[in-house]
Amino acid sequence: MLILRPGRPTLTERSRNIEYNGVMMQYFHWYTPADGTLWTQLAENAAALAEVGVTSVWLPPAYKGAAGGYDTGYGVYDLFDLGEFDQKGSVRTKYGTREEYLGAVRRAQQAGIQVYADIVFNHRMGADRAEEFRATPYNPNDRTEPIGPLQTIKAWTQFTFPGRKGAHSTLQWHWWHFNAADHNAFDHDTDAVYLFEGKAFDEDVDPEKGNFDYLMGCNLDLNNPDVRTELFYWGEWLIDTTGVDGFRFDAVKHVKAGFFLDWLRHVRRHAGRDMFAVGEYWSGKSELLEQFIEATEGNLMLFDVSLHYNFAAAGNQEDEFDLRTIFDDTLVATHPTLAVTLVSNHDSQPLQALESVVEAWFKPLAYALILLRRDGYPCVFAADYYGAHYTDTGGDGEKYEIWMESHQWLIDKFLYARRAYAFGEQYDYLDHANCIGWTRLGTVATPGGMAVVLSNADNAEKRMQTGSPETTYTDLTEHVSRPVVTDKDGWGTFACNAASVSVWIPA
Image 1 (cartoon, rainbow, N blue to C red):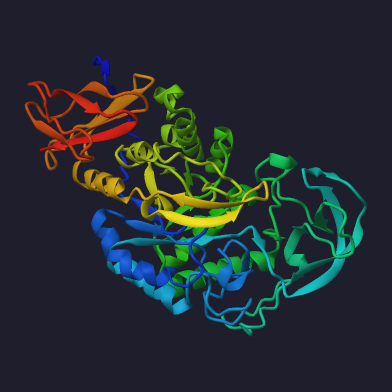
Image 2: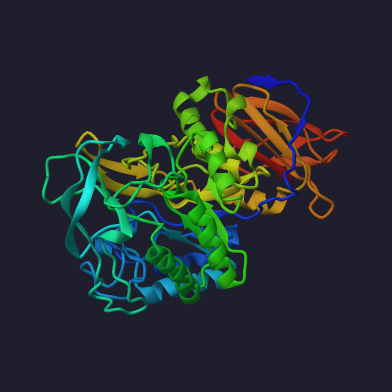
C-alpha cells in the first residue's frame, strides 16, 4: 500500500477564464461496418448520448470517396456527393445516404448535440480520366531533391463526376488544379513524387521529408484561383445544405496553414456565426504545433497528440512510467484553451498506419485525465465507448483479429461526474511517480466538488483537500467501498486500487 503524505497543492492557472464543460465524441472508427447504417444509428442514439453528457459529435467524411460505399471518406472523390449520386459503384457512402446524413444532423441538434463535419482539403483520389502533362520526379523521402529531369507523364488527374452531371457545381478538375501526384503511367518502376510543371510545393507545411505538402493521391494546388473559389463556395454550400456546427480538418500538417484561416473566415462570415474548428496535426513536436497556432492566429483548436503518446507510453511501461510527467510537453499544459484532448482515434487504433495503442488497463485512467480535469476539450472515441471487433492485415502481412474493449460503463460515470461535480478551482497533487490526484472544490451553486486519485502500481491512498469540510465522499466507480469523511478543513485520505482510478463525490 502506497501512503502518500499531503503536499502543497498547486492551483492550476486558469487561462483566459475559459472552461470547456462540453464533451466531444468521435462517432466512428476506421473499421465502422460499411453497411450504410451509421447515420441512422446516430439519429437513434442522439438522445441517449445527450443524456449521458455528450455535447458534440465529430462525424466521418460524409462525401463520396474513391472506394464508393466502402470508403472511409478520406480517399476524397467528390465533395458535393453526400450519398446522392450513383458514383464509384454506389449511391450511398459507407455511412448512408444524403437524406440519412441530413436527418442524423437534425436529430443530433434537436437533442442538443452539435455536429462537426470532417473535411479533407489535401487531396483527391479516384479520377475519371488520365491526362498527359509535364512534371519533375522528386525523391519521396526528400521532396527537396529532384531525381530526374522535367518529363512528360501520364496521371489520373481529370475529375468529371459523370454521375453528378453538374449538379451543385459545374467545375471539373484537371491536372492544373493540382501540384503533385505519385503515379506515372509511362513509368511504373520509379518511386517518385511528381511535381507538376509550373508548380511548387507549399512552404507553410510540416518539414518532414524536406517538405510534407504532398501526402497522397492528387495534391490540391491551393494557390490556384479556381481551387480556392471552389473550396470557398463548397464551404457555403455545405453549411447551407447540412447546417453543421463546426469542422474537423484532416491532415493539416500537409496543407499550408494560412489557407485554413482564409477558409474559416469566409465560411464563418457566410454563416453569421462563430463555427467551431479543430485540426489534426499529427505530431508530437510542440514547436510545430506552436508554429501552426501562430499561423492560424489561434482560430483552430488542435488534437493533443503528445498527450495521447504519453498515455500510450504509460500503458506500455506500467508501473515504470512516472505519472508526474503525464502532462509533459502536451498542448493542454501550454495551450489549455486550444487543446482537444483524446485517448485514441481512428488513426491510432490497432492495425492502422499511425498505430499507437493505449493499453486497455490504462484507458480508464486516461479518460479520467481528460474528462475530469478543468483544461482541454475532451474527445471520447467510439471504439473505446462501444467497443469494436474487426480483422485486417498488419504491416507484416499477417491477418489479425482485433477486439477493442468497451469502457462505456466507466466513461458514463466520468461524464456524470463531469457535468455534476467538475466545477470550481482545481488543486493538483501530481507529486508521486505511481499515484497522482486532484480535487475540484465546487462552487456556491455546485458545492462539494470531487476528488480523483489514480495509481499505475499498487493500491494507494492520497491525502488531498476538498472545498467541503466534514463531508462524506463515496467512490463513484465502486472500486473502493469504504467512504471518506473530510476533516474540519476539508482534507481527506482518498484511496484507489492498484492500476486503477477512483472518483470521489459527495454522498
